[in-house]
Image 1 (cartoon, rainbow, N blue to C red):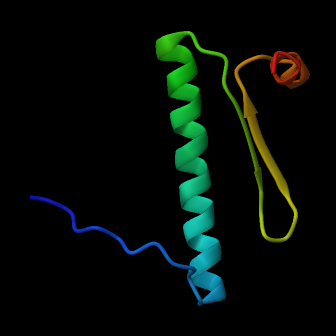
Image 2 (cartoon, rainbow, N blue to C red; image 1 turned 135 degrees about the vertical axis):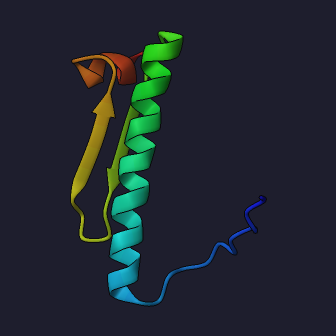
Length: 70
């Protein structure tokens, strides 16, 4: 069974957009955590919601160390 492609466009319904954001955010942070564990990689993810709320994940306890390496 193959999934169809989802057309990427802004979700107009505010409630559906928030639900989709929450689900995709948790999935993204989970994948980042898995990648850091499986591949011993340093990962930092920073996400701001449309309301300006910050969500972050860092495999290094001090996220600034990873950012300074840039």
